Length: 251
Length: 251
DNA sequence: CAGTGGTCTAGACCACGCT
DNA sequence: GCGTGGTCTAGACCACTGG
Image (cartoon, rainbow over all chains, first blue to last red; front, side):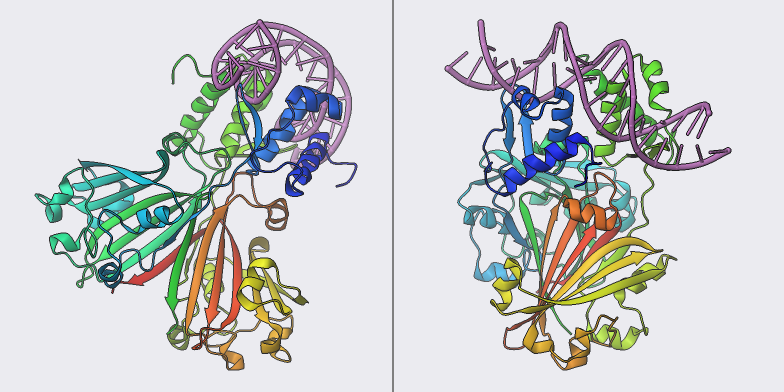
C-alpha cells in the first residue's frame, strides 16, 4: 500500500502477512497490545484499530483477560441438500438415531446432539405467506457438536396436519424418508431459498458466534402432489463451519 | 439490557431501535457524531464505538465528509441454480444477449452488463484438484448492474477442450443450452458447492462492498456422461443483493 | 468555506482469566 | 496479584464533500 494509507492499515497488513505466511499459525497468541504499541511506536488505540480490522476479516479473535489469537477454523460439515431428505437414500443408508446432519458430523469424528422444543405459534410473515394465516406448529431444534451450539433448525407445520402426531412432542423423530413420511404425508418436491447475511444479536448469542461470522439462512418448503405446502424448514448455518452441496441434473 | 452493559452498547441499542421502529428510515442521515456526543453525554470515541457496532451489523454506512446513513438494501436478484443452465429452459425462454443472470436483473428494472477477460493460467489448487495439473483457460466475468460492480464469475476450462473455440475470445458468448453446448460438449450433471465467508480485501475493492457484507462463494463443476469434469465456474455473490434458489425433486 | 467522518494521541480505570 | 483485553475520556489535526 502507499504511504497515504493510515498507520493502522499498515499494522494490519503487517500482521495479516505474518498470519498468511504461517509465522503466526492458527491458535497462536498475538503479542499483547502494550507490546505491539511499542513495536510499532503508536498509541494503544491505533493498535486496537488494526486488530479490530483483522477481527472483522475473521482472522483474529480476542477475549478479555486471555489475549488475542489467530482464529482456528472449524472443520466444515458438508451437507448435501439434494439428498438430505431423499427417501431412496434413507432406505439404503438408514442409521437409527442419525439424520444426515448427525451423520455428517459423526464423519468428522465429533459428537452431534440436538435439543427439540415444540410450540404452537402465530406464523411469522414469511411462513404465513406459504401456509396462510392459521396457527402453525414450530419444532425448534438447536444442534450441538461436542456440546457447543452449532446451528439452528426450525420446522413449521400447519397445525391441522400434525395435531396429535409424534411431531407435537419435543423429542427427536427419526424415520426412513423423514418425519413427514412417518405421518403419511408425502412431499414430492422442495423449493430451497438461500440468503447470506450477518447474524442478528440473538443468533450471535444463541450460537456463540465469533465476530465476522456470517450465516446462511436456508429455507426449504416441501410440497405434496397437489402443490400444497406441507412444511417450511428454516436453517441458520454459520458460514465458518458448513459447506452446502447440491447435485443438479442437466435436462 | 442490564445496567452492566457498556454505554456504547446502550447507545447502539437506542439507535438500533430507532431504525427498526422506522424513526430512522433507510437512507436517512444520522445526527452528526458531535451532536450524538452531547445528546448522550459521552465522548466522541464512545459514539464512534456505538456507530461501528451498527455498521458491523449492516445497519449503517458512513462516509467521510458526508455523514452516517441508515443503510439502503438492494433489491435482491433471485437466481435459480437448478435451471440456470437448463437446455430445456433455454429453448423455451431464450433471449438473445441475455443469460439467466441478466434476465433476473432486467426483471428488477435495472440494467445488466458484463466485462469478460480471458487468460491461460496455471490452475489454482481447487481447480487443479478437479482437472489435473494441466493449464486451464480462465474466463473472468465482472458483472455490473446500472454500472456498479455487482458480482464476479470465473469459469475454468481445460485448455485442450476449448483451444481455438469462441470461448477463447474476450466477448460475451450466449447460446441456447449454454456456452459448452456451443462447442459440442454436453454436461449431463453439475455438482454445486456453496460456502459463506467474509470477503477478502481484494473482493471488497473489486465489488465496492460496504462493511459487513458477507459473500457466498458458489462453485459449480459440470460433468459429461463419462463423469469427466468439463468446467468449473466460481461465482462470488455478495449476500446483500442475491437470493439463491434450488428446486429439488423428492425421490 | 463550514461541516462531516477518519486518524491518532496519552492518558485512566474496569473486568476477566489465570496461577 | 498480575497481565490481558474492554471501556472511556478529552483533546488534536487531517481528508473529504458539498454548497
